[in-house]
Length: 249
Length: 77
Image (cartoon, rainbow over all chains, first blue to last red; front, top):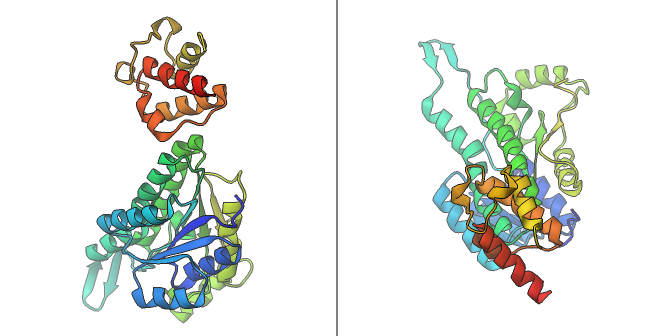
């Protein structure tokens, strides 16, 4: 798909990797609309980056997604591309042995991560693809997964959510390809972002980098380029494009 | 269009051609679910070199309706 003048929705596009994706897609001439929770961030993004629109929306809330996408469709028609990037990074082991004894993974945190990282993908895709099908738009859905989908110690909820994202990617590719809609995923490894720095201690980060054959973190622009590649390559479908410096081989 | 639609339906739905009558509807064939319906739509579009609208796709829930929609298409083309 040629990106110029295409209508692209990016969720979670205010900060981090999502921001780079928005900038990269806008530079390619796409008409990017950003769905994000952060109202102030959206306002700043709208001023600095040439985006087509900013929509304040909690994508982990189905009713909010249904209402926001309905408004988008009324104003813009069907999107050509959906990038499901929004999510949260959460690290916690199943069982923690601390000064207070043995503690279980917090159930509320589990629910929060699954809602933000997995349910949001389902809600956005259902609402956006419904319109694509109704208008016979041959679109693309790109889900942002993670190498943690393979199972990452200390990330029960995040790993489970991302494994779910990979399963949805394959399922939807099988269901929607015949309508001309491609679905694929990009799975970044450890990347230079604020959320990586917030989630991992300096010591853990150093150990992680040692495990990457390229001995460095990924750069956000490399992940954004991966998203562009998946959109532009019309034969890439149902697969996960792993951008991890060779971490998982 | 004579026989082509029936042949395609039999092939896609995996139903004996003799069973493909005008009265046959989605509800009569277990395999004719929404995913199979989409497969059928794409096969019809390929066979007749057309692109069906969403309303037409929704309406085509029986062999009779499929033929009606395709008949209207050939009448205007």
